[in-house]
Length: 347
Image (cartoon, rainbow, N blue to C red; front, side):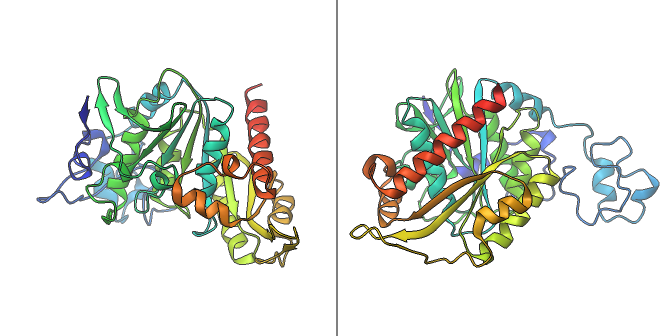
């Protein structure tokens, strides 16, 4: 096996169909996909159409020249990724409307929880600019290798695999200052070129907060891979819930099923007296009320526990470190609920 080149070289390993043109020095000139046309007219035929840049509706559009000259039709990588991930039983995207609600912590602990029953689990760190999954999985500083089957992910344990841009950076604190096109190219490589083994029970995608390039890339490239759905993470207060409503709207617009919502940091249970204090008060009913209003499943609440922070910092499984705690029990209940919902989708 050989080491995968560092990210400065990988970013240039893109195909013509990626619709990228590099200026001197490796800068991206433009990228176009049907989900990324800015300031498109109301009757835009779409970038995949043969009439892109030619239809009467295109007159005066700032993207007309790009659309007219760009390759037409669906990206062949979409079908290729569908075939590549055909042996993955369940594909789950984890989203949050706002940063700081514990999404990556939940994603990594969900991965540990699913792997607890000896299922084969993979997790992709889609947060290109803020890759925290390697540290939270205890594999920071590891390197990705390449073989004739593709990129080999990093394994914190035999049945748990991780892929992240964090493994491709020369320095852990190196800033990734990329526009959307470079992000899209790397996400495509993660989906198409990583070899997860012959069979994988669960593949999790830890996305950055919001609804931006990374989310659109996942939705576009996973069209034929049949994503099971999204899990939304929030905290109880209205500021976080308002952004989750936007995330719900995003899922509905791109026709992505919502597996459910998790309310994280939901109260603090004193380890000595077991008294619960509401630190982030749900002034409008919290995530459960939101789920009732939006007619989507509520998966449960996870209380604040300082041990969760310790486990995330040290890359350890919370349910193994604190299997008798209220928080660990709540997390395990949510993991089981997710497994049941995913199994019912396949039934």
